[in-house]
Image (cartoon, rainbow over all chains, first blue to last red; front, side, top):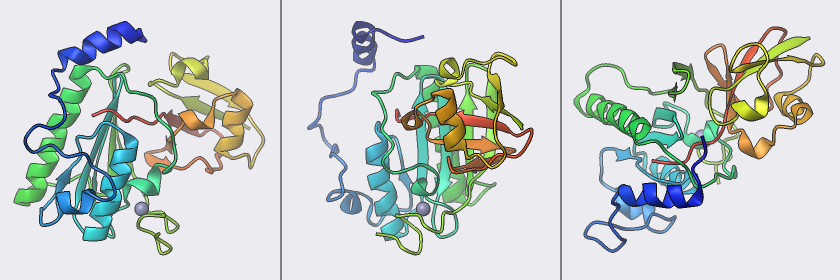
Length: 165
Length: 79
Ligand SMILES: [Zn+2]
């Protein structure tokens, strides 16, 4: 199913996102990211572009702060706990320059992945259970299918490899 | 050799499944990379972020073995 531009706009309005400039809101970029996360125990990705996630990933690697990666598109969701050098980072398995379209996302996919993301944060912060460190959860809501996959570190990763930029 | 490509996500229409609703049987040369296989099928590389095979994430340079079931994943960016 593909939403028309009009349907997408109407759907997005339903999300009720506040305008930029509200209290506590700041755009994330390479300049602002380190200050946004410095001193925190974990960064919980609720971002809406891959580009912003790569920025957060690099800042987390640089400051040695764990990051929960969570992304959704359509009825697909992905989730992982990232904390190099113990685990791979985002750029170890997703090419940095890959383009993405404006995502069309179902609210139920977002709700499911964000709840699991919150659970990962609770487990890490309290030390209970086992996080998705070094593993990637992929949910294909349409089939439906849940896969938990092993991810490997890329020794040539531009973010966390030996030749990191 | 024969490998199987599958996608339950956005790529599944491009994949033109023929084995079941999500899977396509592909005959390819031994030693071909996933990039080459996707090229033969006309699937744009920009639409594939990575793949997974037997519970392990693989990059697009992966060289499949006979009978591999390779699930391809498009990038997802929403949150
Ligand atoms: Zn990395």
